[in-house]
Amino acid sequence: MSLTICLAANSLSYPEGGGHLWVYLNWALGLQALGCRVIWLETVEPDRPAFQVQALVASLKSRLQRHGLAEWVALCPATGSRLAEGAADGCLENPDADLLLNLQYGLNRDVVRRFRRSALIDIDPGLLQIWWSDGHIDVAEYDVYFTIGETVGRPGARFPDAGRRWHYTPPCVALSAWSACPALPGAPFSTISHWYEDEWVEGADGYYRNDKRSGFEPFLDLPRHTTQPLAGPLSGGRRAGRPAHARRSRLASAARLLGNVHARGLPALHPGSAGGIQLREAVLRAPGERLGQ
Image (cartoon, rainbow, N blue to C red; front, side, top):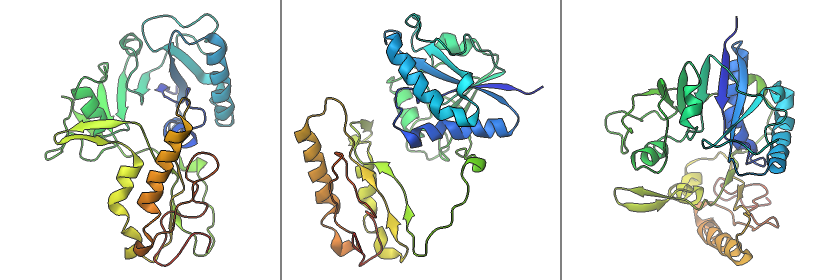
């Protein structure tokens, strides 16, 4: 008899996040490949209107359909309250499983206790332990704790371990869903990412930004050390409620950071029409290459 695994994800409220969805989908498909039945569990704020929840569920199911998971979506309240009437229509009720595999941290304690065995997978190594240790998030108790961080809980780690024993596991990649595609000669190594995030982390030396801009900055000289073309299309993001002048200010800041680094072998940034930073072909290229060449 195959095992039933309930995978607690955190993708329902972010339907436009393709890469975000695949963080969880890779684990679901990997478990399916091992012969497991997978239930996809999402949390919902109890005060969210049913019509909004149903629209989000329909969007999620449309993306899970091709993977055989659309009929296995379940919802639970983010707090102890009940969901709005009709919010969970068409979803599994009171799902039972051999194991709860939680990748979203904030699952209600009562929900966690329903399952015979439970495991937490840390996909934000360092940050999760800081949030937890500083009391910024309330995490239930689990039978076992996994992390994709190789140094979490190890001697010399520069962040706390939240008082838990962590077992390292590499991030899951379902190879069956990622077929090899031939690349054109000279094609760059590439990545796609957000550029800004309105988030700060408190460390021993004070507060610092938790965004990709701050992460990229120390490596702006990287293209000088390789002949391999590198590409990084980035998006500044357009969030509801963010005034246009604030978005323009952020774009200008990004342009100042990366747009004046031709001497380092990098092309200029071009603000895109969608409010993000569209680099069409490359942010980071080998020395001497420029956008559009």
